[in-house]
Image (tube, rainbow, N blue to C red; front, side, top):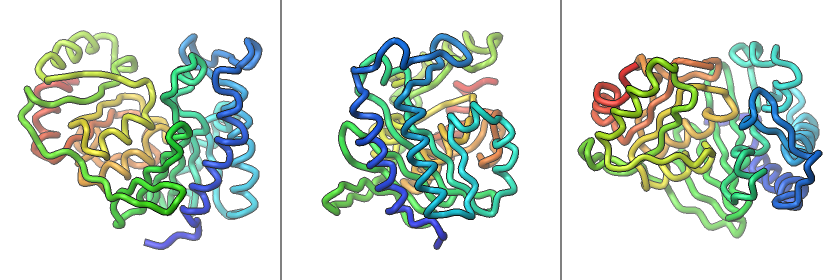
Length: 274
């Protein structure tokens, strides 16, 4: 699939923004450079804002016809979200995914971008500033780990296993309060549960074949569009909790990703009882 956005150029832009605006601030943030948004654990830093500003400025020069939608841009103007479904071409960016980790000095954060065309995600990029590499996918082209020296490695999701042997990640903080305890109890049926507080690294881990499932309830486009496409291109099965496809305009309805449809059905029946 072709697009007027060159994903290698966009990937390099994410890397340059990380080197210019994110990494120099890691473990060097002043108290006035970290602020809470909706709650104490929902943070924004100078790194988020300055990196998005740089990415947006260059992206609008390179692709002036594309709608630019970034996490911090939407925080300033929530009406931008409503334009995504109808945009002929859009670039969605999370300048620092895992801001809580970044602000705490934990080296588990990433920079994510996706390209949307006609209401469909056609490319996804997750850059790891600490490892200096990308996990990338274009629709129909597979999922790849790429390094700045040109090295590339195709990624494959894990082989299916029985429910009791599954390891993975689940974000339960945004589940309905009345269902949270039930789902947490159900997760005792799997072998292992964790949460990195960073979707970028969770998606990278699944696409690399190291875990068997991911589960989310709140669906902001900058958090999940790139990773979902990458997961699917690595061979995984992804759908909202009701079984419908996850699309760029969806903000709720949950998201469950597993190695195949049979594993997805098992997790949906036995664990995600919402």
